[in-house]
Image 1 (tube, helix red, strand yellow):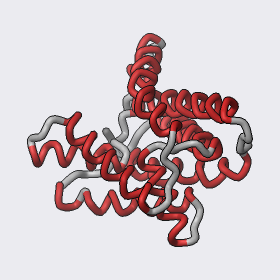
Image 2 (cartoon, one colour):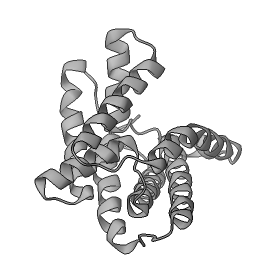
Image 3 (cartoon, one colour):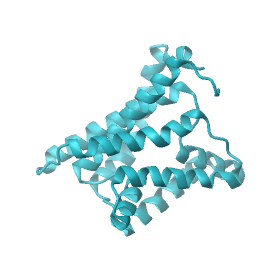
Image 4 (tube, one colour):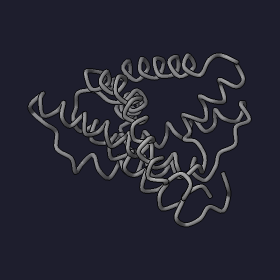
Length: 203
C-alpha cells in the first residue's frame, strides 16, 4: 500500500468500487434479499429514516472506529471504499427496476452478485488498503487468533441477524449471495491475474 498511488491505480480502484456498489444496488432493487452488511444497512435506514446508501456510509464509518482498539491502519483505498460504494448505492438504487416477477428478480440477483465479484476483483488488485469490514475482520483475527473463516462467519451471522431484526431484507437473494460470492470472486481474481492486471496496478 502507498499514500501516493499512481493515477492508474486510483482509477482502477474507484472503478472497481463503483462496480461493486452497483452490484449491491442491483440486489437491493431486486427486493428478495441483500448481502448481510446491506441487510444491516437497510435495517438501520428504515429505523432512522435515511436511504440505504446513507446508512451504508454510516455503517462503514462506525466499523472504521472499531479499527482503533485493533490498531489497524486504513489506506487510501479504505477511505475511498467508504465513499464510493455508498455513493454507488445511493445513485443507482433509485434508477434500477424492482421486478414484479420472482424469476426476473432472481436473474437480477445473479447479475448483482456477478458485478460484486467483478468489482471486488478489480479493486483488490489496486492493493491500496482493505475495506472497512475486511480490515475489521482481519484485525479481529489477528487479535484473537481464531481462524479467519470462523471470524468472518461469526461477523456475517451477527450482522445479518441484527439487520433482519431491524427490518432489513433477508431472503433467497441473501442465501444465493452467501453461496455464490466466494466462487465468483475467485474466478474473477483468476481472470484478472491472467490478464496481468495485478502486476500493472500495484502502486
